[in-house]
Length: 133
Image 1 (tube, one colour):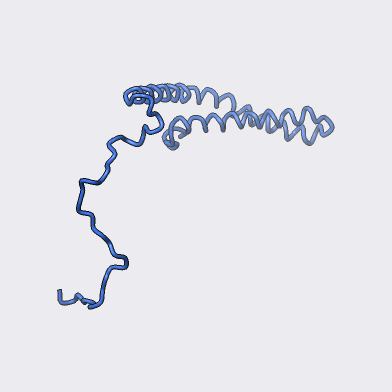
Image 2 (cartoon, rainbow, N blue to C red):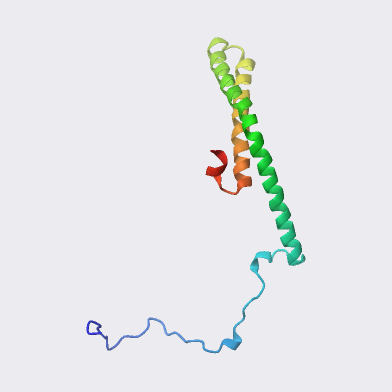
């Protein structure tokens, strides 16, 4: 204690009144998680949450099973349609229906893959590395 310096005029920045009477404090025993659903019972909300989690897990497993099948078809199709779009852009500039048809189909195939992966990430609730690799 030899290195402690005591200041003679020190005081707290703001005066603090300590509360020692704990009988007047209010503590809510209800969890705030279910504040929006006050009309439903807590057990019904738990059962509904379990059922929704189960349906989410089953849907995620089925969609993950279907993902390689979808991507085997859509990924080469998207690439071929993009090549066809570039070829038609230079060889048939007058035929806009054919050129933009290939371009829109290629974009649509890419969006199918992107939105499918986005939906899987949404269902997985953020475990992206384990799902998509």
